[in-house]
Image (cartoon, rainbow over all chains, first blue to last red; front, side, top):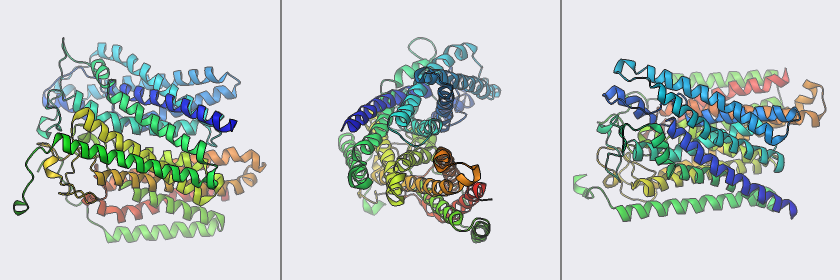
Length: 300
Length: 277
């Protein structure tokens, strides 16, 4: 019984860490403009719209976070093998991983923006100086939380994978969850704030991103401030639920029916999310209604 | 026709010669394994190939909209095919590896459910963001009616887009993709772990307990690597975006199966031979 209570406590802590990690990951990727919406940041100068948005989407978020979290976890693992205290080892490992992220962000911004020189897009050194450190700070929170939850899974819950491998796995999943959930909100709702609410961006508007703020030109810090309020929170909930429910079903139900208990609970949870998704879909169709009149059978 | 709706002209065509060459290569690779690592090595390789094929097939189900989806211009999840499939698959592998002690069937099913659960949560929250954050209902651009629910789609597409969000069939496709990916990744891990647990004590001249961490780490790394190989390979077959099982691009799966089998056999052969020769 004590074992299960201990496991539930660790599961709750890991879920909370994952929620913070997901939120920080999405905000970091939006300030750094790393997700798919960055295609518009890259496209805008080619359409004649100069901007002051950061631009570092050389790799997708999942492999990038896979690298940084595996690096942080691997270095923390090495420091722990040198008999350094676990908390200090994780902090040191994550700091070194964040420096790699900072180098990546700097070279990516300079390289990608310099490639737009023929369209007249300048490289703003003040943007580089003010925003790289902010992405690094958010990346540190995301990497630290992920490496810490990996350490808890390995050391307290006894998962067989070594810490660097867990860092890679949960880093990739963090990037996948954060980019899937947070990207539309940054892409549609923030970059195209001048388009109609409640509709997709018409393809003809591609590249015409919002470039001006309440005072002066908009920059990526404004974008991070905006998306953290919904996209970041949703990404945090997404990654937090993934980690929490995966651990919860294993810790509590694994011993029932020689492993089948956790499987049945997992299937039930999938069904619950399926019903929730269908409810959301139907709710939207009923509440918002169609954009155009339904086509009659004869005309189709 | 808009840029998003445009399809590569020859993208969906099957090439019988290439398929035949792929099958011949597969047989050759299996023959090499049979000659150089008969018994456990060959069995592990067959498990790796089946796992790779499951991953390759599963990736076709995952609704991926890429950059257009991030602007609400196309349905699907706003990230890359390989990215999302890998995220779901390794989440499944995590659960499967945890259940490895409980036998092959339980571990593989646990891995499948782990991948499916990750996709179910992600797909539900994608629709949550579209509906409650952006006020946009789900609509498919490829079919007039959702094949599962029968909901009509065209009138819910906003002007100038190919659809947006995840219609129910795409959600189900995502969960199936996660299930297959998680099962395939776990199968590869278990097969390689069983092989390494038997062979590594001889290779490293150490006790079984001493080599266990090495066996777990090596099998885990090969499982993730094979996952990425198959996910990226399938991403090329899909060429960008896919809505799910109702998308016409889904019909391209046979050639991805052959390609995944050959790629998994080649990579799996390396994973087997490093401990058997």
